[in-house]
Length: 533
Image 1 (cartoon, rainbow, N blue to C red):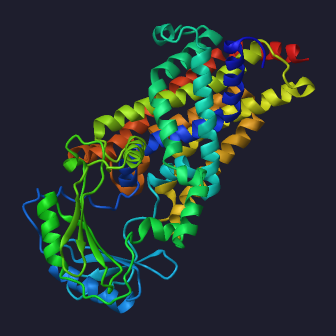
Image 2: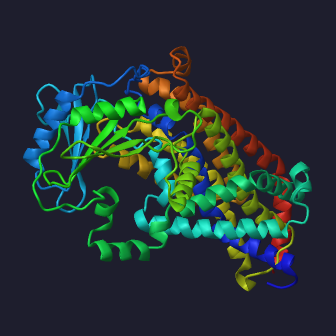
Image 3: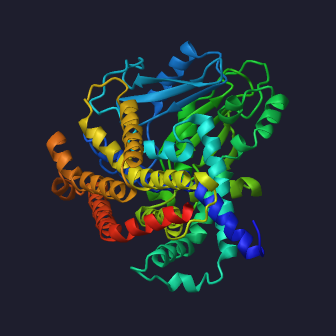
């Protein structure tokens, strides 16, 4: 790292970008797809019937029978629990109850509305799949739990370094916003990288920083540990359990149905959950949460549920938190805002499409940056790794193909596995995830065994074919098709297939572009070997 500030930042931008670009590309691509987690999940569950839109809320509902049955079940099976939770659902044949077990983890049961009896788990007619949640889990933690979350955090921090150093090294950041020169070799790749970076710069800063911020408790574990030592409760109990302390004196729980009616009339929405903290204690409290949805968002950023907190013995109202309101604490309000901006709980279709396009542009920036590194080295090797430079360049080439083209192939392969795996396969959702990683591993091996230009063409064409043929696969395996989705106004499932076709067309165009550029790349590759030697 030599020269002035801009030269040092250019070095930092290049090498930080190179070593994290493949992981960052994977995180961003799957994160971009997870913007439409619900439509993808619906498409991957073709047996699931779309429920009609809920009728407008007309007034408090009758939950008396479900609440009575739920309390009786909890008294019999979770008498010593620190918390009971009931999810009343008026007009439904069944509902759920939850409680904290001795280890502080949730346990639950499905109960019959008519009898209050626990219902046995039945084999579902809907196929077992993670749906779009697979992309969320990979984006968040690479399907590797806390270890994966740490890896994603390290990559995100490096991404912030690359973004900041990229801004500093840019001398013409505003001019580059309007500059793209096609068919100019290295210049075109640089223009594409700069254009995508400048266009999405505010979005990238926001999404990377908010992703780091909302996982603060993992990256700064000393704070939760200190709280555990102070409260003598494990983190999960403190997070989901009661906030108040028991008195140690017995108390009789007040009737819940009137409290639910008050909350529903206040929030103008059905009750979502009724939580009893420290049941049976004189200091018990009852929290009634309202239901929120995009229909009730009404332009608010925060999707926070409203909650009314009552004294569990007298039924007296203690506190009301209206829905969609920011917490009074400034730090909590900031964190809630960052969480909403990252997770998009508040967003309708227009904002989700804006996020999708911006995410794809940011993903393209990372891909073009990785490719640009090798385009430069093909024209002039810098011999950074001495005698091992050609081998390192070859590894980078392989990783570029396997990450950009191979991950795209793995993502569409995941959707294909949803239709091809047997319906009754045990742990079927795990097999779908295994298919995703299996296709990605095959793409890596293929890239290692084939010349770069051929590997690019073959994987891009494979991804294009799988994308374009996805609607046909759906017809052959389920009998459902795109025109039927459109006729039934099932816009979300139709959009999944239309988007797949559009992405397939882009992959095909990219494959054709690689083919037309192949002779020039082959010649420059020879020049690179000579320079390296």
